[in-house]
Length: 287
Image (cartoon, rainbow, N blue to C red):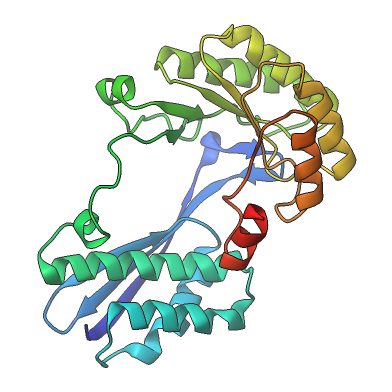
């Protein structure tokens, strides 16, 4: 594989009235960084990163990939060497891993095209025919990517229940939550996950309302997006152990393993992992 050039497109779209919130802030825009890597035979691979400031991601992608332009490398060498170089951007830095991810996706796409096979086959072929999926469903996404027939066949849950952009407006937030859950139920999702992490009092109201609306028809899950302190997370866990909630996602900062263990010891299932970005951290989680 000889990389001839790299095109990088930092993209950002204002949400206007479609803005929504979670415990750690208001989403007023959607960002993405598209990376196109071209070889010297006219093939190209497309990668994408949806996390982080797109201009920052674009800069890191350029810094990581430019030393390899015009030279012959195997895919394995490229990825391993770039992975090692990214340590200069902080071993746990989300931006560096987002940039590396976009490069990796583009290289896999490029390699598959060079070999005239699908990306699935390039990655080793089909491993399983069934998988649990999540689909974001909120005011910022009036369209639904997954068709109704597919949704009936694939056990996808709706990642929904976001806060209204003014988190302090309790009445409007509960109404907004009700609208989102009604939409998810109408679309026949197999589970519903809502956002919490504002205040314990408001979050308890949100969970009670969600449970009342769902009526046990599908599993209910909650996601605090790492917003709670240890004390708040344990308080919420004590409440959740008496509720019909399938899991408690990211109750505290992702590397607070002691609190995560303590919550599980209270009998509450914890969901984590999306904020972990290194092999070292995953090993710590497993241990």
